[in-house]
Structures are given as C-alpha cells and as structure tokens.
Length: 92
Length: 134
Image (cartoon, rainbow over all chains, first blue to last red; front, side):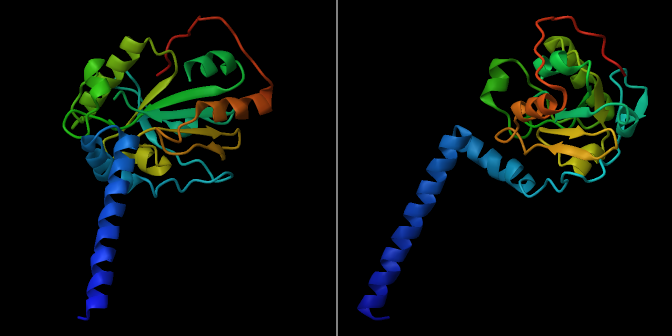
C-alpha cells in the first residue's frame, strides 16, 4: 500500500469513527441514555418498517378479550354505526 | 385521548386495545416507569395481560371501552400497533386515519383534526365518564 493510500485509509477510518460517535450521541439525545439507545436498537428499530395499513384499506379484524377476562369480542363488532377511533397501547 | 373521547364520544365510538408491554421490567424498562411505579414484566399469559390492563384502567380511572390483544399478538400484528398507534375506522370498515408509530409519531391532535373535520369542533368541560364496556 502506497503512503497516499495509507493516508486515505487512515482518514477514512477516522471519519467513520467520528460518524459512529455522532450517530451514537444523537441517539443518546433522542433516547435519553446509552441504555435507552440499546433498547431502541433492540426493541424499537425492528418495528419501524411496520405500518402497512393505508387509507381506504379494509380494517383487519381481531379477536379481543374484555377486561373481565372472560368475554371475547371482535374489533369489527365495534365498527359500522359510527367512526371508530382505535387506540393501541400498553401501560408501560 | 381521554379529552378527545369526552369531546367526541357522542359522535364516534372509541376502543382502546391493550397490546404487549412497551417497557416491561425484563426488556427495555424506562426510568420514568420506575419513578411512577409502573413496573411490570412482559406478560407470558393472557391472565397476566388482563391483570395489567385492569391495573391501568383502575389507576388511571380510564373511561374508554377496552379490549385486550391475545397472546398471539394478532391485533398488534394486523395493525402494527406496538408500542402505540392510533387509527380511525370509518362506517364502512375502512381505514380513515392511520397514525404513525409511537411515541414519536403518536399524535392525538391528528385524530382530533380528523374528528373536527368530520363533526366540527367540539370541546366539552364535562368530566362525566360512562362505564367501560366489555
């Protein structure tokens, strides 16, 4: 490897490291802490490509359980009469 | 969302669907959840999901109709729901509004805007809440 090539490789490596550090710091700022960056990469990133439903698509049905833990019903049972606002989430 | 529910419950139906936990103690727990004593492991059984959902409704005095996703995460998978997401389904059973993935793109204001466009602006001060339907 010529001296010029070595110099290019060296600065390319430094550039990549600086870029990775910048990305990491950006994620830390977004997520809150390095631990949260891990959580984001481990748990959130795999879901970011999801969301295939588009306006006008038929709303999928799903079987749901009532709070009493015994009664099952279908999401579609709640549609039809009026617009249905659906809020998906969890406690944490 | 509760404010939007109270404003528009006479015009639209609402359904909250509990999906698998976003920040359980055995996965990606948040400091804010520790601070607020909202600490649960990821449920391994439907009974555990039901228990957490009931804790949520009771502690938050949550007024909206409620359903719980099954352990195959069918609703989550069908709607790309995790960790949180909003939709409006019209009277014909079609997606009329599809929100982005929470928390960064979870925007109740967009739902209010949809409802406002459809039904006009509504703001009620009543805090009366109906019982939760199964």
